Each structure stands twice: as structure tokens, then as C-alpha cells.
Image (tube, rainbow, N blue to C red):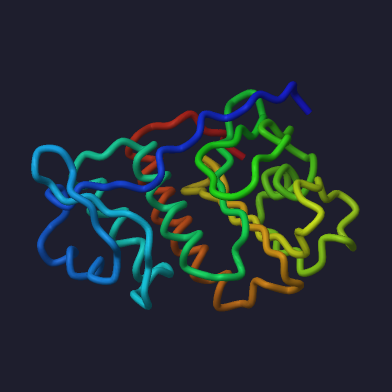
Length: 210
């Protein structure tokens, strides 16, 4: 484990609607909104039954890519939407993989964690990279390699953001409930990870080839 440092707090999800196509704006009808300086509409959290799994979040990622949003903006927005898509998610974050074989915490929502840096092969997150596979832990108390972030965490899901043999990052989800991540939930998160992998590939973010 490398020395930890407090991550830069992510700017909570605002994305200007004037950068989104008219067809996609309807997907945000259930979101609360505020006025952004200059007259553009900005989104705040407040999901109300709209599609927010892979079928709902991936179009947002694609639109942001087309609009020229930075990778950081795309990641922050994705974390916001994903975290609020399921009441079982109490911690949602993205760890980015760097060439020195260390995962570094990026945007996240939830309690602060001491695990800002995680070496490949350590914990559930590091093991997922080392073994190049997604990991669903229904009961973290039975996982010998679990790195505890919160005593309240009961289950964890790690899904790699990868494309054509390259691992860019991973989505890490924690839940207060046992066995919180059913096959349908896992499939939706995998869709989102695939969409983010394309964004990484186009933005040429540092990555590790496995």
C-alpha cells in the first residue's frame, strides 16, 4: 500500500444541458435542475424512476463524449448517476490503474476511505486487476483479501473498465446489504464499464496492458 493522501473532492454532477442533444434531454425529465450562469441549464441529483442502468447511463456517456467533455467530467457524471440508481449502493467510486501497477482513487460518492492507493494484487480491487476479472463478493466477511473501508460494508462488486486487453480502471461498489449485486445488476454495471472503456481509449488515459 502506498502512502495515502486525501483525494480531491469531486465536483458533484453538473452537466450543461446545452451540450446534450435535444433527444437525450428527455431522459433527464425526472432530475431536479438549477440555472447555470450564462443561461444554460445544469443538472443536479434527484433521480425519479428514469432509466439509470446501462441503457440509461451509456447514452449520457456517449453524448458527453460527442460534446467534447473531458474524461474527468464523464467519470464524475457516471459515478453520480450510478450511485443514485440503486438504493443498495452506499459507496460508488472509480479506481484508475496507472503504469506503476497501482490503483488510484478517482471520483467517488460515499464516506472517505484510507485506501486512496491500492497495489495490484491487494484486496478485492487489486485482485480483480491481477486476475483480469470482475469480482462479486456477496459477503465481505468471508473474503480473506478484503480491505475494509467501512465496518458497515457487507458486500462488494468490482467491475473492470477494459478494452482489447487493456485495463484502464475499475468501478467499485459497496453495499450495506449481503449479496446486494444480483446477476442483473452486475450485467448493467458491466455495460457501463464497457462504455467508459471506450471513453478511456479515445482520451488515451494511462493504462496497463495485461
